[in-house]
Image (cartoon, rainbow, N blue to C red; front, top):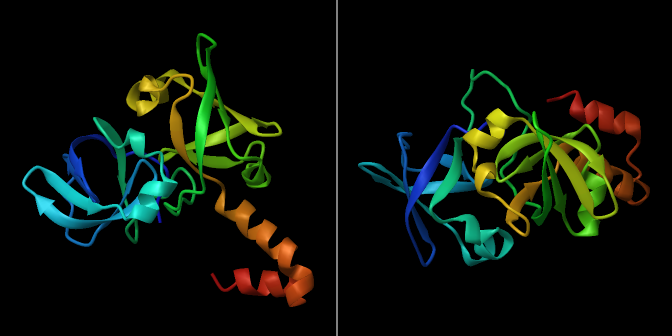
Length: 204
C-alpha cells in the first residue's frame, strides 16, 4: 500500500530489457515494494547508490513507459505505524492518460487529462486520483477528461514541472470507486446485499 506522497525524484541509470536501474537516496532492501511513477514494482537488486526493479512485458505494455527515463517519482510501500497522508494507493495502474492542457492561473495550475471513457466512472469529482504516483484531488469530470488543480509547490517538486500537452501519464483511479462499481455491477449476479457488503467491510 502507498499514499501517493512522493518520497523522492530519483534518476534512471539505465533501462535495458526488463531491468530498470535507479539512482536514489532511498536505501532499498531486496524484495521491497516501491512505487515508481505510481506502479508497484519489486526490488531485485540493491546497488551502492540505488536499486534495480523488473518490469515484465505486461507491465511495460500497460504503463506510460516513455516516462521511465531521466527522472522518476519513487515512493516506498508504507510500513506498519507510518503516518497516513495522501490517500490509499495500491500501485496498480488502471490507464494511461494524456495531458490535453496545462493552464497557469497564477497561484495554481489547472491540468486537463484525458482517459479512455470506460475509466471515467471510477473518477469522482472531489475524489482522489493518482497521476504518476502523485496523490491529487479531482475537480471536474467530463465525458473523457478530468481536471486537476495543482499548487505551485507540487508543480515545482514533482515531475509535473516537465509535463506538457500530449505527455502521457500513469493513472490509478480511486480504489473505493472501483470496488463500489464492481459490487453494484455484480450485485444481481451474486445476490450480495448492502448488509453483506457492510458486514464484509466491517472486518477490515
